[in-house]
Image (cartoon, rainbow, N blue to C red):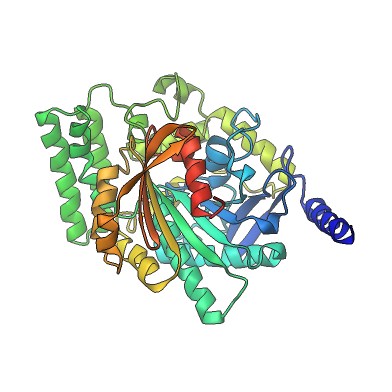
Length: 448
């Protein structure tokens, strides 16, 4: 009886310590000064259901872009406890894990810099900032010291996650910091090798019957210019050619809109609405930010800047008591521009280091209907990975992902590496196919 009472008191204590935050549910939030002039925002949701938080894994979610906000898009559109209409999301990741949204790089979302010179210019700086963010988070939230940590992400977040995870592991080894317990990463539709994605757009679209021979040749010609720029180390030019390749796709595929880069069957970002109507409902700031951006990011910026989204984030700012001088930036053009010289640089070698130099479990997942990071391109770099289990992984069987009797794709696993191909999903797997995403989440975090 005494043991039961003590356990109950400990549970109630952990729940009481949680702040109410925005609407309901236990939350924590704050800023970490990751370096001079750079202030990174985090927003934690404790696992639902009265469960002891320290008994469940901590999952960090990093959005893409670069410059896209986790606190708005990932939270309200993909896996947070509330949807865009502020209705409870039945299939939220918060039902299973503690979920930490980080607005990264600095200058994104509620994160901010004192001056533009403090924006991150490369992936190494982003990773260093994230290491400081996590250490600062543990100082403010000591109950998560030693709790198993997994980092999940989307798109450009994959590039940032790989480097962050590796640098965090090195920090643990260097300082013998037992508070750090990073166990694995989930690289979702990750921009690990931008060239592999770009040069496979033409064959991918042709495979789905969306390009004729003439269209194939026009898209491939621009993609090859991107390849030459990458091979020549002309990184800013490579980023520009990537944007040109997007334009070539939109011109070659009849009826193709910017939304289709995230899902070839369309309508993901603005279901049931045309682009003009979406732009009419976007804030002036979002439309201004979208000017001059590549097509896919333009669609993202316009959608993320819808007045309804902006209104919600203003309410969030008031509820969390964030500094009045901070303005939420859903998709930051300055952040993207600061990284133009780094955007197309691959991090395949960093993924190899995770597999060969750390005990971490590395999981890669891809929606089969995603174009911007298509599954053909992802498998190209995955099959080139050099690690001790490479040949065994290639020979491993593909096992179906079955949820409630329905096929949701397949997984292929060996050692500490698993690849997931997710059916009926584009770029945003957690919202396109939430059942498969949650099944994968629970498997990766060893809840099942």
